[in-house]
Length: 284
Ligand SMILES: [Zn+2]
Image (cartoon, rainbow, N blue to C red; front, side):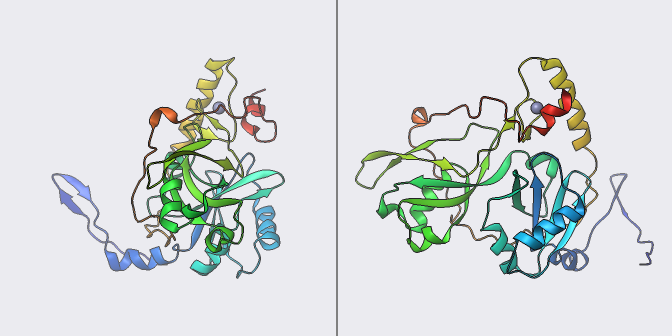
């Protein structure tokens, strides 16, 4: 395409470029139905990823697949329905490596948010049956993060042994294994939380997928610096698109755990996981 010179503005001696809505919005629309796809460990090649999608994500029109230099894919679907079919049917794995999906938003910044804010499937075993309304489910799941979606069996109450929900959770903090809930009559109970998959999070490198060893901390810190440097590379994708429409359970209310002191954290997967620890192996 050909380009033309459009004079920038000068504000307080600085050059400032003003963008126009009618130019930006058509570009946004192209990315409204897109998911970020990140595979823990080694990023598969384009052909492998493309093959995985065509073999596993069925009942949708073939989406567009883009590989980003930062080590993740963007999958652009043909409709919001196609995107939801895939997003709400997880979790997925590729060669035993977990796949993290996240809706693309205008302000998506892989290096900032992606390693920590991750949608995870959680289960609430033996949740009292009077708590299965969308508001109550939303309140309970909000103790973990931002609720996104309740699976079909939970919504239709066709399976009542556990409720299952997709919740965007900050995994840099220990994942909760129970939540204190108080019913309208003032009766307290502890609701157990289980996870379909618990990601490892490395506090040293601030990334998901491994946990650095305590020994050789210096090395780890150098490694972390190197990784931060790498992650500070300019994001070349510059579309300013509106976030995809999300079916959220909440109406924006955030429910805090009722008793902070009751929260229990558990150190998970203390032993080094070989399958997910691609970056640990890298250093040895
Ligand atoms: Zn690490």
